[in-house]
Image 1 (cartoon, rainbow, N blue to C red):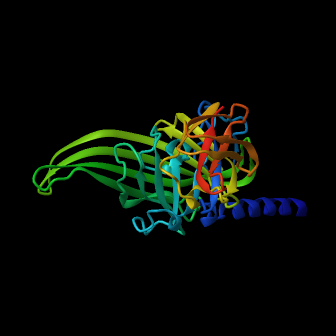
Image 2 (cartoon, one colour):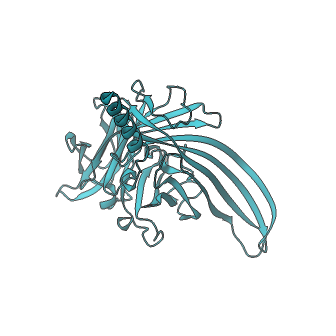
Length: 365
């Protein structure tokens, strides 16, 4: 009887202590880290319903079709600190390298480089704004009229949080005639709906809290005359669901499920590893406009355009030199077919050793 009482007490204590665990800022991305996230675009599975009972989530059979590698650093190191004063983190690079934390910014399917600005604080992880270097919104700093909540805090089982965000771009602003505005509205409902253990191809963790985000994004065009709306048209309306699996042991989601409004799986991202940004960090180096590296991502080779002779070095994320060769002016072809898929850094130095350029690239296969 004594043993039975102890067993029941132990089970109750374990259940209660886990159910009351609170997620804090330790789950949020940090400056000076690059997070390597694997992406499975094909696997499908059933999303378990919300539950107050402990769950066992087994994602160990997920595949790795390609990787995303968002690099976070302090906004003070970016050229736009004054433009986004409420931001304390930023990312930079081709949108294909972003993980799903881009929120409502228009990065899906956009190959151009751009900046995204964030804020991490005790209330959660927020999107502040963005700036694309090419495309429809090139060179325009876009501020959220109401900041977009990406991950709410504190994380407590059964807690629910709502968020409405909005950004606006004046597309044809002229005081003498009608003004056209592109407006994007996002409505979110967050619920920490389940807890349990999780297995991925990388991690096996006993204490994870799941955050369910229901997401409605509506993009519209408005025409105004003297401040009054005379025409409006809805361009798109997309509802989706995202499921973040979070733990205080990692400053990035362990796994994220992306699903449509009917909970059909679109794709899955899961944490692989993180590396400390070194002197190869994009944020600490000045890029030269007359040097280009493409394509990015690549499969077997990259091309480098430069107007002088230089030394090209290719490094793995651990800092290992995997390729080095001298190049001349104009266009140069660099064979990288023998490298494994993943993230690499291409560094270009002048003959005297001066760093000229560095780029974070992805090999897809």
